[in-house]
Length: 345
Ligand SMILES: [Zn+2]
Ligand SMILES: [Zn+2]
Image 1 (cartoon, rainbow, N blue to C red):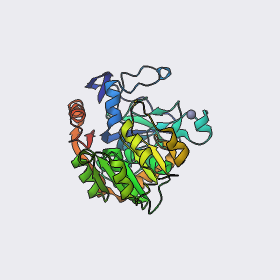
Image 2: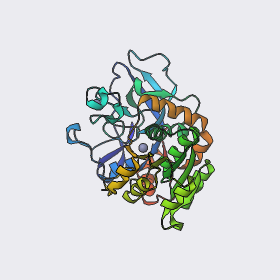
Image 3: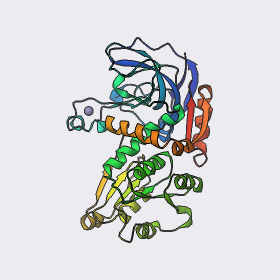
Image 4: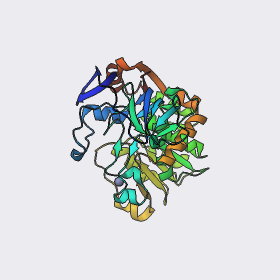
């Protein structure tokens, strides 16, 4: 069967791979229909994202962790409700169950976790096995839209970490796919959302989804502007979806005393902060990673309710065989490509 294999850093190709092994107990065989491509895929492909040595060789790997597909076969002992032909979204996480994070019920932060498409082979192929506990039926959602459940689940986790509540002003820094998903989830929770970005087209998508926006290319210092937007004392919640030190610094600076900053954006950069911001404002500075099962289930419900908004974010769609070129194009045109979907069906 066909697959897109990442052979080494910077090298991805269409090739033939063997059919999947026989299903183990509690596994289903998923036939991917639509696979979203995101920033972390680019980082994996360039080699910027490095998997732990103890996990074995990083390459070759079949990527693809934002997955919608149908169940093609069931292994022994699968739970009721999962039948052949059912369309599902894949929660990509499996965790060790024994580390500190797992023991206190925060399996999403497990240092030994395995992610589909990163540590084990993912969805850029015609069929692949997944534990039944990691597939969530999505009803009649279109596969392209259902593939957005995974990025939305990242946003649900960030919203949970930030304890976003109805009526609160929430600033979302960065209007890429994760920023858009965070704005969507914050709006669903009744928050008033302001998105910031340098790219006008991304902000326009945010406005179409009901957020207010602030174009950073038009302003020198956004901290006082965001504070003013939130009524003078600063927003109680700021979610960084950029991973940029300057943005995270501004988040901690602009936040209301006793507010929460949640960092979702990924980078390996270093950040400097004024110590007095901690001791004078007593903020919660929180990280956020992938999500748990309950958050993934909520993400499916959000995407089901907000299909029209999600559909607008899906700017590019290509068949499996064009994935390497399409991904290269998306990496070099970040302002143009909001969400690339690879159609595997
Ligand atoms: Zn992703
Ligand atoms: Zn663990």
